Image 1 (cartoon, rainbow, N blue to C red):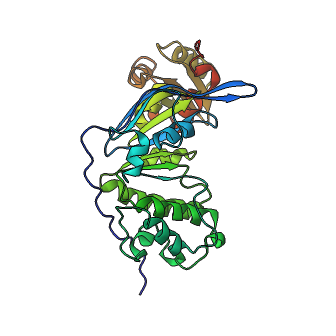
Image 2 (image 1 turned 135 degrees about the vertical axis):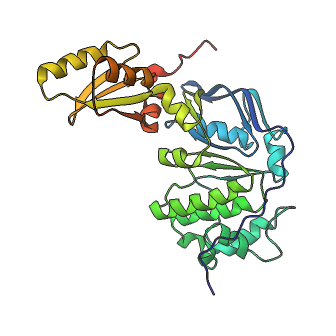
Length: 331
Protein backbone atom coordinates (compact mmCIF):
# COMPACT_ATOMS: atom_id res chain seq x y z
CA UNK A 1 0.00 0.00 0.00
CA UNK A 2 1.52 3.33 -1.06
CA UNK A 3 1.10 6.70 0.58
CA UNK A 4 2.04 10.26 -0.32
CA UNK A 5 2.67 11.22 3.30
CA UNK A 6 6.29 12.09 4.08
CA UNK A 7 7.55 10.34 7.21
CA UNK A 8 8.56 12.68 10.01
CA UNK A 9 12.33 13.26 10.01
CA UNK A 10 14.41 12.10 12.93
CA UNK A 11 15.19 15.15 15.10
CA UNK A 12 18.74 16.33 14.53
CA UNK A 13 21.18 15.68 17.37
CA UNK A 14 21.50 18.80 19.49
CA UNK A 15 24.57 20.66 18.18
CA UNK A 16 27.22 21.94 20.52
CA UNK A 17 26.68 25.49 21.71
CA UNK A 18 27.95 28.25 19.45
CA UNK A 19 27.80 29.03 15.77
CA UNK A 20 27.14 26.41 13.12
CA UNK A 21 29.31 28.34 10.66
CA UNK A 22 31.86 31.04 11.45
CA UNK A 23 33.84 32.70 8.64
CA UNK A 24 36.39 35.35 9.55
CA UNK A 25 38.25 37.31 6.87
CA UNK A 26 37.75 34.38 4.48
CA UNK A 27 39.64 34.69 1.19
CA UNK A 28 40.23 32.48 -1.83
CA UNK A 29 42.55 33.29 -4.71
CA UNK A 30 43.00 31.14 -7.80
CA UNK A 31 46.14 31.46 -9.90
CA UNK A 32 45.63 31.45 -13.66
CA UNK A 33 47.79 32.14 -16.71
CA UNK A 34 46.13 35.56 -16.91
CA UNK A 35 46.87 36.43 -13.30
CA UNK A 36 45.30 35.91 -9.90
CA UNK A 37 41.50 35.63 -9.59
CA UNK A 38 40.25 36.79 -6.18
CA UNK A 39 37.04 34.76 -5.88
CA UNK A 40 36.40 35.51 -2.20
CA UNK A 41 37.65 38.75 -0.63
CA UNK A 42 37.41 38.83 3.14
CA UNK A 43 34.01 37.34 3.97
CA UNK A 44 32.93 37.70 7.61
CA UNK A 45 29.82 35.65 8.34
CA UNK A 46 28.34 33.85 11.34
CA UNK A 47 25.37 31.49 11.06
CA UNK A 48 23.84 30.22 14.28
CA UNK A 49 22.57 26.70 14.83
CA UNK A 50 19.00 26.21 13.65
CA UNK A 51 19.01 29.08 11.16
CA UNK A 52 17.76 28.75 7.57
CA UNK A 53 19.91 31.03 5.42
CA UNK A 54 19.76 31.73 1.69
CA UNK A 55 22.95 32.83 -0.07
CA UNK A 56 22.25 34.92 -3.16
CA UNK A 57 24.56 36.35 -5.77
CA UNK A 58 25.08 36.56 -9.53
CA UNK A 59 27.27 34.07 -11.37
CA UNK A 60 30.90 34.58 -10.42
CA UNK A 61 29.98 36.34 -7.16
CA UNK A 62 31.93 33.87 -5.01
CA UNK A 63 29.00 32.18 -3.28
CA UNK A 64 29.79 28.65 -4.51
CA UNK A 65 33.49 29.06 -3.66
CA UNK A 66 32.49 30.20 -0.18
CA UNK A 67 30.25 27.14 0.29
CA UNK A 68 33.07 24.90 -1.02
CA UNK A 69 35.29 26.20 1.79
CA UNK A 70 32.51 25.59 4.34
CA UNK A 71 32.39 21.99 3.10
CA UNK A 72 36.17 21.58 3.16
CA UNK A 73 36.29 20.99 -0.60
CA UNK A 74 38.87 23.73 -1.00
CA UNK A 75 41.17 25.47 1.46
CA UNK A 76 41.06 29.23 2.01
CA UNK A 77 44.10 31.29 1.06
CA UNK A 78 43.32 33.71 3.87
CA UNK A 79 41.15 33.94 6.96
CA UNK A 80 39.49 31.06 8.76
CA UNK A 81 36.44 28.83 8.38
CA UNK A 82 34.97 26.90 11.30
CA UNK A 83 31.95 24.58 11.30
CA UNK A 84 30.62 23.74 14.78
CA UNK A 85 33.96 24.97 16.06
CA UNK A 86 35.97 22.55 13.91
CA UNK A 87 37.84 22.74 10.65
CA UNK A 88 35.30 22.04 7.89
CA UNK A 89 36.75 18.67 6.87
CA UNK A 90 36.69 17.48 10.47
CA UNK A 91 33.01 18.43 10.80
CA UNK A 92 32.19 16.65 7.53
CA UNK A 93 34.12 13.52 8.54
CA UNK A 94 32.23 13.47 11.84
CA UNK A 95 28.95 13.35 9.91
CA UNK A 96 27.76 16.72 11.16
CA UNK A 97 27.60 18.26 7.68
CA UNK A 98 26.08 17.03 4.43
CA UNK A 99 25.56 18.71 1.08
CA UNK A 100 23.35 18.66 -1.98
CA UNK A 101 25.49 19.84 -4.89
CA UNK A 102 24.57 20.36 -8.52
CA UNK A 103 26.77 17.70 -10.06
CA UNK A 104 28.92 14.69 -9.30
CA UNK A 105 28.81 11.87 -6.78
CA UNK A 106 26.42 9.50 -8.57
CA UNK A 107 27.19 6.13 -10.17
CA UNK A 108 25.00 5.83 -13.24
CA UNK A 109 24.96 2.00 -13.35
CA UNK A 110 23.49 1.58 -9.86
CA UNK A 111 19.84 1.84 -8.96
CA UNK A 112 18.62 4.64 -6.70
CA UNK A 113 18.22 2.26 -3.75
CA UNK A 114 21.63 0.66 -4.35
CA UNK A 115 23.21 4.11 -4.36
CA UNK A 116 21.71 5.00 -0.99
CA UNK A 117 22.68 1.63 0.49
CA UNK A 118 26.28 1.93 -0.79
CA UNK A 119 26.80 5.44 0.52
CA UNK A 120 25.18 4.56 3.87
CA UNK A 121 27.72 1.76 4.33
CA UNK A 122 30.55 4.32 4.41
CA UNK A 123 29.20 6.20 7.44
CA UNK A 124 29.74 5.13 11.05
CA UNK A 125 26.59 7.06 12.00
CA UNK A 126 23.58 6.77 9.74
CA UNK A 127 19.81 7.07 9.68
CA UNK A 128 19.66 4.05 7.37
CA UNK A 129 19.36 0.68 9.06
CA UNK A 130 20.94 -2.51 7.78
CA UNK A 131 19.71 -2.80 4.22
CA UNK A 132 16.66 -0.62 4.89
CA UNK A 133 16.68 2.45 2.66
CA UNK A 134 12.91 2.95 2.41
CA UNK A 135 12.69 5.66 5.08
CA UNK A 136 15.34 7.92 3.60
CA UNK A 137 13.95 7.46 0.08
CA UNK A 138 10.49 8.34 1.37
CA UNK A 139 11.75 11.45 3.12
CA UNK A 140 13.45 12.58 -0.09
CA UNK A 141 10.27 11.92 -2.07
CA UNK A 142 11.77 9.25 -4.34
CA UNK A 143 10.52 5.99 -2.82
CA UNK A 144 8.91 5.14 -6.16
CA UNK A 145 12.33 5.38 -7.87
CA UNK A 146 14.18 2.81 -5.73
CA UNK A 147 14.57 0.26 -8.52
CA UNK A 148 15.39 2.75 -11.30
CA UNK A 149 18.93 3.10 -12.64
CA UNK A 150 20.49 6.47 -11.85
CA UNK A 151 21.22 6.90 -15.56
CA UNK A 152 17.48 6.72 -16.24
CA UNK A 153 16.62 9.46 -13.72
CA UNK A 154 15.95 13.01 -14.83
CA UNK A 155 18.12 15.88 -13.63
CA UNK A 156 15.52 16.79 -11.02
CA UNK A 157 15.24 13.18 -9.82
CA UNK A 158 19.02 12.99 -9.49
CA UNK A 159 18.91 16.12 -7.33
CA UNK A 160 16.35 14.42 -5.10
CA UNK A 161 18.69 11.43 -4.86
CA UNK A 162 21.51 13.76 -3.78
CA UNK A 163 19.17 15.07 -1.10
CA UNK A 164 18.55 11.49 0.07
CA UNK A 165 22.30 10.91 0.26
CA UNK A 166 22.71 14.10 2.29
CA UNK A 167 20.26 12.77 4.89
CA UNK A 168 22.19 9.56 5.50
CA UNK A 169 24.64 10.82 8.16
CA UNK A 170 21.77 12.56 10.02
CA UNK A 171 23.62 15.90 9.75
CA UNK A 172 23.31 18.97 11.94
CA UNK A 173 24.01 21.20 8.92
CA UNK A 174 22.69 20.85 5.38
CA UNK A 175 24.44 22.87 2.67
CA UNK A 176 22.52 23.08 -0.61
CA UNK A 177 24.00 24.57 -3.79
CA UNK A 178 21.22 25.29 -6.29
CA UNK A 179 19.30 22.26 -4.93
CA UNK A 180 16.29 22.56 -7.25
CA UNK A 181 18.25 22.95 -10.49
CA UNK A 182 16.58 20.82 -13.16
CA UNK A 183 13.31 20.46 -11.22
CA UNK A 184 9.95 21.56 -12.56
CA UNK A 185 7.61 23.73 -10.49
CA UNK A 186 5.85 20.78 -8.84
CA UNK A 187 9.10 19.04 -7.98
CA UNK A 188 10.52 22.24 -6.51
CA UNK A 189 7.44 22.64 -4.31
CA UNK A 190 7.69 19.06 -3.07
CA UNK A 191 11.40 19.44 -2.43
CA UNK A 192 10.88 22.53 -0.28
CA UNK A 193 8.06 20.82 1.61
CA UNK A 194 10.59 18.14 2.54
CA UNK A 195 13.18 20.77 3.46
CA UNK A 196 10.65 22.57 5.68
CA UNK A 197 10.21 19.30 7.56
CA UNK A 198 13.98 18.95 8.00
CA UNK A 199 14.39 22.54 9.17
CA UNK A 200 11.56 22.06 11.69
CA UNK A 201 13.72 19.50 13.51
CA UNK A 202 16.30 22.19 14.25
CA UNK A 203 18.81 21.45 11.53
CA UNK A 204 20.79 24.38 10.18
CA UNK A 205 20.12 24.84 6.47
CA UNK A 206 22.23 27.01 4.17
CA UNK A 207 21.33 27.15 0.49
CA UNK A 208 22.42 29.03 -2.61
CA UNK A 209 19.74 29.61 -5.23
CA UNK A 210 18.93 31.64 -8.32
CA UNK A 211 15.20 31.42 -7.55
CA UNK A 212 14.54 34.53 -5.48
CA UNK A 213 11.06 33.24 -4.64
CA UNK A 214 12.67 30.28 -2.85
CA UNK A 215 14.79 32.61 -0.75
CA UNK A 216 11.81 34.85 -0.05
CA UNK A 217 9.48 32.07 1.10
CA UNK A 218 11.85 29.62 2.79
CA UNK A 219 14.79 31.51 4.34
CA UNK A 220 14.80 33.19 7.74
CA UNK A 221 17.76 35.26 6.61
CA UNK A 222 19.36 36.27 3.30
CA UNK A 223 23.04 36.90 2.61
CA UNK A 224 23.84 38.64 -0.68
CA UNK A 225 27.35 38.06 -2.03
CA UNK A 226 28.90 40.01 -4.89
CA UNK A 227 32.47 40.38 -6.10
CA UNK A 228 33.57 38.00 -3.36
CA UNK A 229 32.18 40.10 -0.49
CA UNK A 230 29.04 40.19 1.64
CA UNK A 231 26.92 43.03 0.23
CA UNK A 232 23.90 42.61 2.50
CA UNK A 233 22.80 40.39 5.37
CA UNK A 234 19.37 40.37 7.00
CA UNK A 235 15.78 39.21 6.81
CA UNK A 236 13.92 39.49 3.51
CA UNK A 237 12.14 42.63 4.73
CA UNK A 238 15.44 44.17 5.85
CA UNK A 239 17.06 43.47 2.47
CA UNK A 240 14.10 45.02 0.66
CA UNK A 241 14.00 48.08 2.89
CA UNK A 242 17.75 48.64 2.72
CA UNK A 243 17.69 49.23 -1.01
CA UNK A 244 14.19 49.52 -2.35
CA UNK A 245 12.43 51.11 0.61
CA UNK A 246 8.66 51.16 0.16
CA UNK A 247 6.61 52.47 -2.69
CA UNK A 248 3.78 54.84 -1.79
CA UNK A 249 1.09 55.34 -4.42
CA UNK A 250 -1.93 57.64 -4.65
CA UNK A 251 -4.57 58.41 -7.27
CA UNK A 252 -3.15 60.56 -10.05
CA UNK A 253 -5.41 63.58 -10.76
CA UNK A 254 -7.08 63.47 -14.17
CA UNK A 255 -6.32 67.14 -14.77
CA UNK A 256 -2.81 67.35 -16.28
CA UNK A 257 -1.91 70.65 -14.59
CA UNK A 258 -2.99 69.39 -11.15
CA UNK A 259 -1.17 66.11 -11.75
CA UNK A 260 2.05 67.93 -12.73
CA UNK A 261 1.89 70.06 -9.57
CA UNK A 262 1.44 66.91 -7.46
CA UNK A 263 4.43 65.26 -9.18
CA UNK A 264 6.59 68.34 -8.55
CA UNK A 265 5.55 68.57 -4.91
CA UNK A 266 6.07 64.82 -4.32
CA UNK A 267 9.52 64.93 -5.94
CA UNK A 268 10.55 67.69 -3.52
CA UNK A 269 9.67 65.68 -0.40
CA UNK A 270 12.72 64.72 1.75
CA UNK A 271 14.26 61.36 0.85
CA UNK A 272 12.20 60.77 -2.30
CA UNK A 273 14.35 59.22 -5.05
CA UNK A 274 11.77 58.35 -7.69
CA UNK A 275 8.31 59.54 -8.77
CA UNK A 276 6.40 57.94 -11.63
CA UNK A 277 2.85 58.10 -13.03
CA UNK A 278 1.36 54.94 -14.53
CA UNK A 279 -2.04 53.29 -14.73
CA UNK A 280 -3.78 56.28 -13.18
CA UNK A 281 -1.55 56.13 -10.10
CA UNK A 282 1.33 58.27 -8.87
CA UNK A 283 4.11 56.10 -7.38
CA UNK A 284 6.66 57.57 -4.96
CA UNK A 285 9.71 55.60 -3.74
CA UNK A 286 11.50 56.61 -0.55
CA UNK A 287 13.11 54.91 2.48
CA UNK A 288 10.77 56.68 4.93
CA UNK A 289 7.40 55.67 3.51
CA UNK A 290 5.51 56.87 6.61
CA UNK A 291 6.71 60.46 6.20
CA UNK A 292 5.91 60.43 2.48
CA UNK A 293 2.44 58.99 3.07
CA UNK A 294 1.70 61.62 5.72
CA UNK A 295 2.84 64.46 3.44
CA UNK A 296 0.81 63.17 0.49
CA UNK A 297 -2.37 62.87 2.54
CA UNK A 298 -2.10 65.90 4.83
CA UNK A 299 -0.07 68.45 2.90
CA UNK A 300 -0.93 67.55 -0.69
CA UNK A 301 -4.50 66.27 -0.20
CA UNK A 302 -3.85 63.11 -2.20
CA UNK A 303 -6.39 60.24 -2.21
CA UNK A 304 -6.36 56.45 -2.59
CA UNK A 305 -3.18 55.87 -0.60
CA UNK A 306 -1.38 52.48 -0.83
CA UNK A 307 1.99 51.46 0.62
CA UNK A 308 3.80 48.47 -0.89
CA UNK A 309 7.14 46.95 0.14
CA UNK A 310 9.86 46.89 -2.48
CA UNK A 311 10.39 43.52 -4.15
CA UNK A 312 13.32 41.24 -3.37
CA UNK A 313 14.06 41.13 -7.11
CA UNK A 314 14.50 44.91 -7.19
CA UNK A 315 16.67 44.92 -4.09
CA UNK A 316 18.84 42.07 -5.43
CA UNK A 317 19.26 43.78 -8.80
CA UNK A 318 20.26 47.04 -7.13
CA UNK A 319 22.69 45.45 -4.68
CA UNK A 320 24.50 43.47 -7.37
CA UNK A 321 24.91 46.35 -9.82
CA UNK A 322 28.66 46.91 -10.36
CA UNK A 323 28.41 50.56 -9.29
CA UNK A 324 26.91 49.51 -5.93
CA UNK A 325 29.62 47.00 -5.08
CA UNK A 326 32.70 47.90 -3.03
CA UNK A 327 35.77 48.75 -5.03
CA UNK A 328 38.65 46.32 -5.00
CA UNK A 329 41.25 47.39 -2.51
CA UNK A 330 45.00 46.85 -2.81
CA UNK A 331 46.23 43.34 -2.28
